Length: 506
Image 1 (cartoon, rainbow, N blue to C red):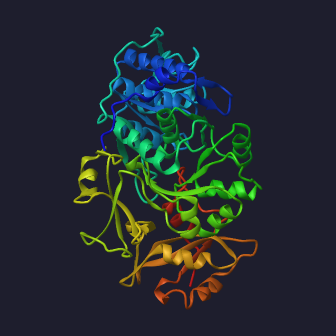
Image 2: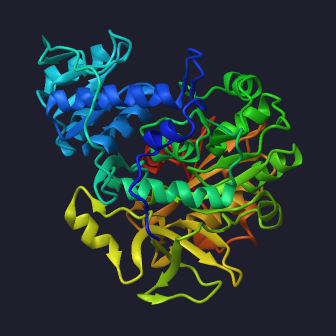
Image 3: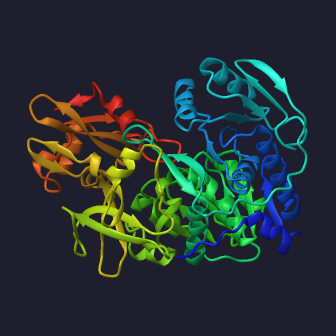
């Protein structure tokens, strides 16, 4: 696939200038493509006035975030959107790893940005607030303020090299240290194009994104909507009542959610309006019971599997596929090749192996070149995920290579154990991990979210009799009101292990 060297908003400003580009759900601010293009020009002018190539962004979800991404695309710089929920040392580590030359903040994040700069001395602070987001208006390093003139409009030539890194995004870190992923303009636009083939595009589309824009799943709808010439509705975050209200009042036709968010919507009594065309459901596996419940309520669910390294979607199931094959994530998107690899060979249909991906959405590499070398092979990028495909090309994700539990010399797939436990009538959800064991090397451990009545550990082990081999039964069982998750919705396996420390062992 040849990715066009295009600046999406500049193009839309010329072809559909009066079309609605962005709605801020929190403030009701609305920007047509002409106004959106001007705002991006001002950000581009501010970036050039700073004279930097790499920016870190510490902002809540708001239109400024994708505008900065497009300004980076326009000026040939790169940005990294930081996760505001992380602690100071974690943020300082990321600012250092991307070698940021400036830290962009707003009124709501300025204090924290200044503290981060003062504590680390890693980058000067640049606030976009104060003159109507007209560009960078002031800087501070180590708590000391400096000021410089408003640079005004940008009049440069767009840097449209599709192979240039625009965005550095970090993986969720659910099973280790988050990896810094380089994504190019070509990656982002190829992902947007492929997604359109699967989800479709209609002229009146409005895509709601309540997911954090520090992850590609939260930022991608804004990139895609600009390419399509449709509208992105940006929410500050997710809460069931607010999201349901936004979908209804803003005429939303599509929304990106993680399974936990969909569950909370359904528990709050939400009904899908007729205007809603799709719910792109990713970030974590969708439990079959949640999928069945959503389909039963008429929710147009598109379960998806994607990674940071592929600028979001890899495979996505349509609602009919989700109904017929509830544990599948569907077929790969256009231009994306998925190979199941087992012991260095291409696995046959039905065989489980590592999911390897190639195509124009795939990152050119990580910040760490050694990580790039270790994860790139004959068939493409090794995702670390375990999966299988049927003869029709549908994909199933069955776990992570790193999550495999080896107990007494036997391999245990945590997903198999979790699926068996989840069938118990008093189990709502469960996460299964391996814990160190002096006798067996590792032991199987389960963190259970119970229903109203909590099953005891022995009852759960008895439930596994006849369903699982003896060595697969959980030796450690703990309980929680909900499973710990990363901001992207995946189970935080390290947090699960911490919660299970000292739990019941039999």
